[in-house]
Image 1 (cartoon, rainbow, N blue to C red):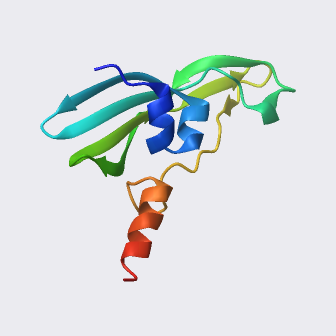
Image 2 (image 1 turned 45 degrees about the vertical axis):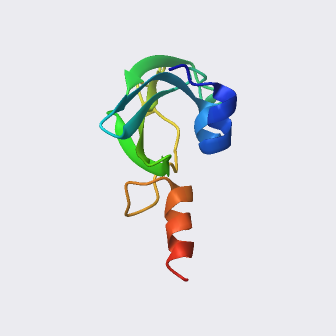
Length: 117
């Protein structure tokens, strides 16, 4: 099963596809798992520093909108860098998960609106 990036743009948050790359996917027991890694681009706000790649943070799993009766789970790995001069860890500040939930912000907002009817 080959997933097209153009198709994913229609069903996933734009932020995710802009800053992360899909590295794999699998379907099992009525669930779709999509695995993303943050792209290697260093944060624009840190261009004044010399940054060295320093691996990834622990993977987070976010539940997204169900598709065709399948639960969708986004496995997201965020990058981190080290400032070569100071040894300070640097990372982007991502707002991928709605506060207090394990769902994407868009999915949480959708459920909130449904609760009003």
